[in-house]
Image (tube, rainbow, N blue to C red; front, side):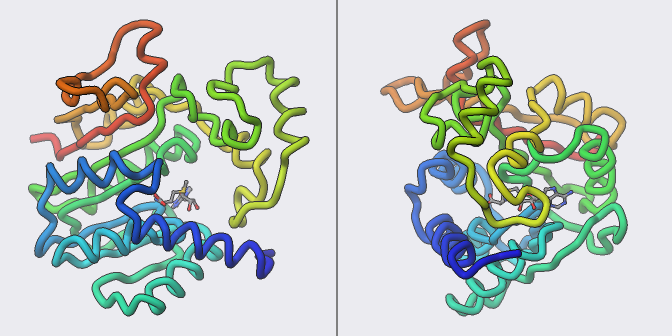
Length: 258
Ligand SMILES: C[S@@+](CC[C@H](N)C(=O)[O-])C[C@H]1O[C@@H](n2cnc3c(N)ncnc32)[C@H](O)[C@@H]1O
């Protein structure tokens, strides 16, 4: 059930993701997308679009058509309400499980923004294969996620107040989450405990194992860490044992295998 309070919290969160270039967890994503891609005239699939903040941002940033799909009806309700509030025409939202109801269009650009870490790995593998089938010949799949070693990968560090808390003894961590537990918008992951338990502990190696056999291949990878904010460090990819725990987001670009 979605209470009025949760609905308003969701609307506010999604609206901030749409309108603010500085929304902390999306700032790097937006910069990278703007600098690297031109989505004008493209058909974009925002897979796991949630409450639609980023879908609306793609639709506003480029002259593209955006199709947002998500399995959660509460998220899609908020996404549709936000679309109406801002009169954005070039985006549609839909509750859809692409394994039960396969995609029928060919997309130029498929985005999974903070989604891949929420899907059980065997299902993620099936979904990537389904996306490969729904990709235009020169299409691209862009995936961003916090790798499991990252300080915020637990999705609950902001409430328990401890970065990297996913590495605490699990019984202790569960008590900390339970103490701060609260409902969140969502059918599948209705509170913080369910959200934590739903994570697949994604790493680059696990993602590449899911990509294997999908008909897609990795053509670009960026590991964004705190150090990238320092002068001259913008292009650094921190991939060294221990230091890679400072990576906050991984970005991967996939294309169809020749
Ligand atoms: C953390 S949210 C990210 C939402 C959005 N991409 C964003 O950046 O704001 C993860 C979303 O993935 C969705 N999701 C999880 N499993 C899914 C699946 N199998 N198919 C479609 N969406 C899924 C969830 O319902 C949720 O809305």
